[in-house]
Image (cartoon, rainbow, N blue to C red; front, top):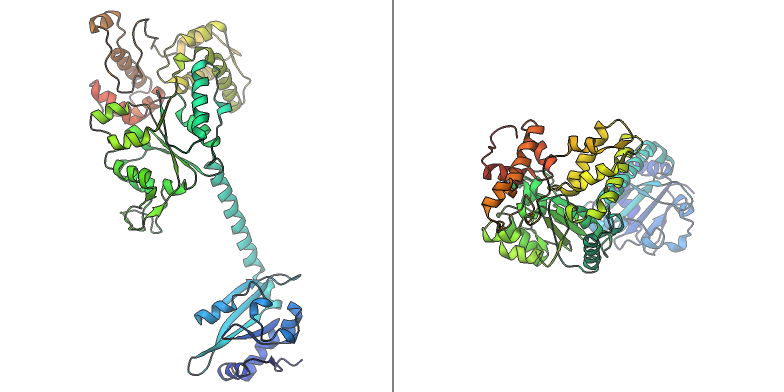
Length: 493
């Protein structure tokens, strides 16, 4: 069939319109060059097609007059009709053939009235786009891989079976944690620093119905106050100096459908607390610098080593936010109350260290383990992990002796019987014991706390960030303690 011989049943004027605007010669050349040509009317019904188009799709002239979707279900011709705008270099799939490059143009008369649209399929030209298509496929693969990695990073990394220990205290908190996982209520994890609150939050999410959804963790104490609102709720484009021009999603939106873990919630500034309260109550957020409100479905787990009730009394934490968070409180036991778990924890940590340093696992002599059990562990498991790492790096043999432990163990001992042990870095009521007795023994909590801080600063040569890590506390908490003890905060941050 000659390219100029066109099958037309619905709108014969289409060909004339195209010839007037493009010229007979150009029209014939386009039809000859393309792998198929098709026209539709204003209702997106097939008006005419050439033999090559019919052969490509395996149809006969009987389809003329039918909607274009009856021949090409994925076509975008109706979009050209609705908008009056062309679509250049689109790619469509043809049965049993490589992807086809398609050009779609609106058909208008001299007065600008729309009569339909024409499509040219470039069957013999798609090879020129193979490098571009290969690049697009590569970018799509990279994007898919990045999304998978990101999804993996936002999944729970720990389960209750990975919480080491079988002592009565740890068994009880595991029981409470598994119960909490069955519900969707807010959980407040309490306990001293280093007791594994974040690990426990991972385990709750892992055992919940939201386990296949994101788990997003935010350390409130590690984010500057000026950026905290944007970090939580996102920011509109140009919301503040230096903001991303495309805007940014906040952690609550990233956790939508899943769980958000707010660690060190006691360090949250008062200025941000009302907006967090609204997010918890109304289940909606408003990005910084935006008037758009987004609905969210997020379960909140929060944790702190501070005394939130004391902070409420001091006016440093909103009472209404505290009550909203304190729906289901779970207190994680300190390491000194889990004496029978110490051997198992030490063994597990030493095995991890051996794998990390590619060394044979080292073992603790019974006397060394006894020496570790006699320590007070104000930093709990985190402090224990630091001590064992120092031992692994300093001991040459396969066994760690009591002398080795004594050489690296901080000189903070367990309180004598009869003296209440309070978490060193939380606000608790003062001890009821007479201060004279405590001073006589040299064992007041304040003295031991001051000595521990001074020793940490000495070991880190006054670098407070390193001292905070050594003590297992946040830098904010360390600065508060330095100020309260008059130790100075003006150098070596």
